[in-house]
Length: 594
Image (cartoon, rainbow, N blue to C red):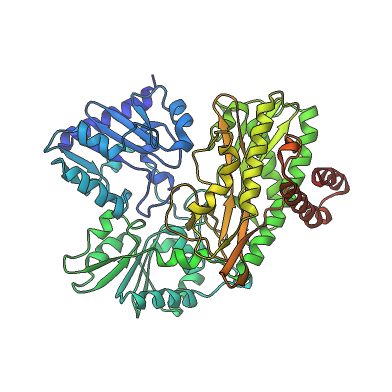
């Protein structure tokens, strides 16, 4: 048994008894509803041992459950095998949500605790209303993390940097005025903003508070007359502090945000996104304040990249393409002469990226997965799981943060001989799905859920599917995951617009055997106008060959072959002048037409 995690869970139950709690919900998020929190907020991981980016831990005095989505079904089972808890595979038939589970696990008059800083206002309302129907109370002011998360890492105090204005982005004041224009439409007196990547974009600042994400812990309040940035002042250099002051941006202490929200006078119209503002802050508003729930204003503005941003993002992808091509050339040769592992190839790829001008860091933890490990779509190798690379599929999902853009690429590489023909069929079906989405031409107003079907159609004909989304937004030297766009089965009512930068990443995963995923980043562009309206299309900006060796060529249509050949021609023309003659010879073969 895992005595460390089990002892921690026992201490939680002891604390629950003292607080007269019958249940405790431990979520993944920090007070900013972040997908990836700093170590300071990784309480769920600390208690359960599961380190995936999403999941909810629910503790009662008799049972403990961990709810995970399809990305983490296999990983959660493995990482919690020796922990006294049950893994619930969210979304599977017959599996209750954690809220429904609580309704029939807890008797009436029970008290369920949750740290209001770690749950969005919309999810809190959902929890509160459903549990109330069964006579179960919710305590959202609970904060026992400090006592139980020992030792707890302090919040980072690293200095932040200012974006290079030569990259052509809008100034802070231009961005703030765009926000105020949207506030005016809502007749808002205050706008609350806590999402870290949105604040980094709005303020043209970047930080290192969250691994891989160039963000910093802060909040913002904007009124028609003032802008307030809530941040630990130690993070600001004297130069940045002076510029903020000259621009009229008032700096307040990070810890004063909730108190200042509580001081907003009655009668004010306060706008916030209920999905991206924590429950503790929203509930601090006075009774007389008019709460205006609206989509995140900054997220909507940030998603549509300017021409200058797209130019720089393409530049970052060319550099990333050079790194990937150099790496793939090395990988093919090293496989014949060296003993390779998941960790060693990930480290080598990082070396090649570090050689590129403007490289800052990886954009997420490298997914380097061989064979059965590649069936876990968000697997990250560790010393304990580090597999030796032999004949089979190596799935590499990696990315880089560059000063001029963020990259995210997945390539599934055939290492040696692929013995099972079904693996090659799966690879080809994924490629067909990838191409179908990349070739899409669609009218304005089309949503991601409508486009998602294109990526799945080929594999559906073989009665195959995958559980994760097909595409997500990508930031401009920001978070590798950003909204509002999403291409997936779940409809979030967000249309795909010109200027969006989005991934295309279908996959197939066979537990215990292999996983296949192919991912490019695409820019959505205006295609043209007809009597039927304005039409859009995608333009891939990832510059790296797709492995042709596992393709069952007879499964591809003429149009699909043409797309792949055209894409490879562009990769060759873009990358070949930037690599050595030896690598160029390899790249020529990798991009030759099929």
